[in-house]
Amino acid sequence: MAKIPKKPEEIFEEITGEYQKIFGAHLISIILFGSGAGEDYIPGKSDINFLITLTDQGIDRLDRALETVARWRKRNVAIPLFMTRTYLEGAQDAYPIELLNMKRHYVVVSGKDILAGLAFDRCHIRLQVERELRGKLLHLRRGYLATGGNARKIRALITLSLTAFVSLFSALLYLKDIEIPHGKGEIITAAGNAVGIDAAVFLKCEEIRKKTDRFSKNEVTAVFQAYMKEVGSLCDQIDRMEV
Image 1 (tube, rainbow, N blue to C red):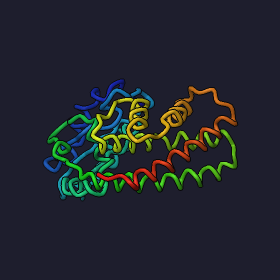
Image 2: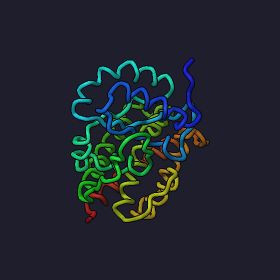
Image 3: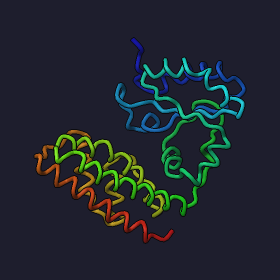
């Protein structure tokens, strides 16, 4: 049975050696990001996420990594994000939120720190926040109708959707020049204070996501309806926000 690491750093040397063997001089860097680079890593539950930067020639040789990627997945290592430096730098205006969140928690495992020099245009962040919020609001409405009012399915919809909102809240705090806290609950609370949304609604959703709540079926439905209302209100605020 594949051994799942208690800490991501336990596999740094081994995984670096394997990718160096595969790509050689075409490997620019390996960077750990996400929960594994912060305080939220839970062995056996959390995926270990790597950003692997390659040269243009290296990115054309991904087939050489198929077996290695498959083997590491058995040890809770997610399929790495393989990029070239040109792609990464060009994505700053298209995916600023993802890169902003990646830059918040990362560890350089090998090679160059290709995230350090990334900078983000606030207008691009605001636009992506609005686009993501509007899309997710439509998803919540459609998802709610698809549940048929079943509380168990509503719980699942909350669980699947909430993490994305935490990332958007982090971006909102960045736009407001407010330091982004580490924990999900702290981020939700800070965002509520910053933009005037009812953070309590999202904190109840976080309880549902973590399975620590004791809400009745009717209460779960009420929480979800309030959840949709707050997201709609947030869409209106972002539309009017000046950066």
